[in-house]
Length: 505
Image 1 (cartoon, rainbow, N blue to C red):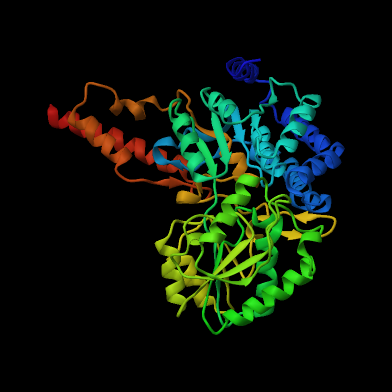
Image 2 (cartoon, rainbow, N blue to C red):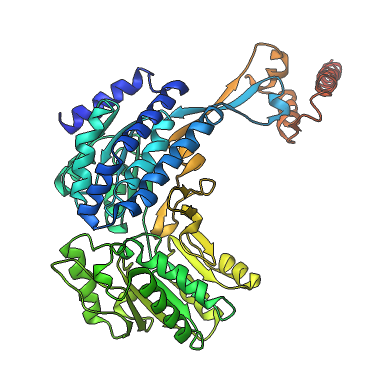
C-alpha cells in the first residue's frame, strides 16, 4: 500500500465516524494495553539490541510509564470528551454556548531512537483517546524496535486505524508529502524544520518535542551529596541520551571540587569500578553518534575531571566530566551523550545571565535551599519545564522496582528551539482534539435582535451599543434574576422606541 493510499484509507475510515464514540476509544486503549502487556519481553529485547539497555530499565522507563498513561486516560476520558459549557453574556443569555471536542483526523507520529518504545506509545495514547487514526514512523536508528512494531502492531490494529511505516530519510520524506491532520515529531531542531516545512504545504498543525542544552545550577546552600546523586542518575541514564538530561553544570569554584568528588562517588556506586561491565550502563546508539561525541572530546580545551577510555567497537563512552569554559565545543549544541561539562561561575546572577543568553532549553534544574533563588530562575529564564532540587522528575514522577509513578498532571513540551506544543495526560488529549465552538440558539426573542438587520439607522445603532457596549457576564449568582433583567431591558428598549416615534411625530 502506497503512502497516499494508506493515508486516504485512514481518512475514509475516520470519516465513517467509528472512532468518535467514547466506548470505541476505550476499547482501543485497552487493546493497546494488551499489546504492551503481551509483548513487553519482545519490546524490551528489541531495546536491548538497539541500546544495550537492560530489560528492567526499559520496563520502568518505557513500558510501565505507558501503561500508567493508558490507565489515567481510561479513568478520565469520560469527562474529557464531554462538551464544555462556557460563560454566557447578556446578548447570549437565552442561548447555549458550548465547546465540542472533535477528533482532528489522521495523525502522524514521528518518533526518536533514544526511548523508542515510549516515544511511540506515549503520544499514541492521547491520539487514539481523542478519536483519531494514527500512522507511526519509528526511527530507523532503533531498527530492532522499529521492526518489532512493524511485526506486532498489525496483530492488534488494522492499518486503516493504526499503521506502522518503516524506512529511512527517503521514506520519511515521501510520507511527509501526504496531508495529515496533525503531526507530532520528537527529535532535533534541524529535522523539526523539515517537518514544519512539509506541514506548512498542507497547513497541518505540528507538535515538536525537541531538546536543548538543559542547564543545572548548583548553589553553595544545597545538599551537595544528594544533589550529586540525582545529577549523576539523570545524566547517565540511558548513557546520556535523554532529551531532558542535564547538559551542563553552572557552579562556583568553592562548591565545584566537592560536587565533582560526590559525582565520582555515585558513578562508582551506580556502575562499579568497571563501568563497561555494568549491566546498568547503556551504549551509544550507533557509530556515527559515537564519532560525533568522541570528535568533540578531541576538540575540547577542557580538563577531564572524570573519564576513561572509549571503545568504538562496543559503542562505549564512559561517564565523563569536563572542566570547561563557556566557549568550549561542547557548549555549542545539545550533547546527547555521557559527557557532562562544568562551567565555573562567580555568582548566581552570572548563571542566570548565561542561561538567558542561550537558546531556551527543554528543562532547567536548580539545586538550592533558597526560595528567592528559585523564583529568580523561574522569572529570569525561560525553559520548557523546571525541576527544583532534582532532575527529570517534573515529567517522570517516581521510580520503583515495580512501578513508575507518572506525573500526569503537568504538560511535557518545550519553548522556542526546544519545541512547541505539549502532551501527556489531559494536555495530550487537548493537543489531538479540535475544540469546536458551538452556539445553540432558539427562535425566541427575535425582536431583541432587530437592530442587527438592515437598513441601519440611529435608533438601531443606539440599541446595538446598549447590547454590545458593556460586557455583562451571567453566572449562577445572577441567573435567578435573569427574567427581571431581561424584562427591564425589553421595557427600556420599547420605551426608547416609543419615545423616538413621538419625537419623530
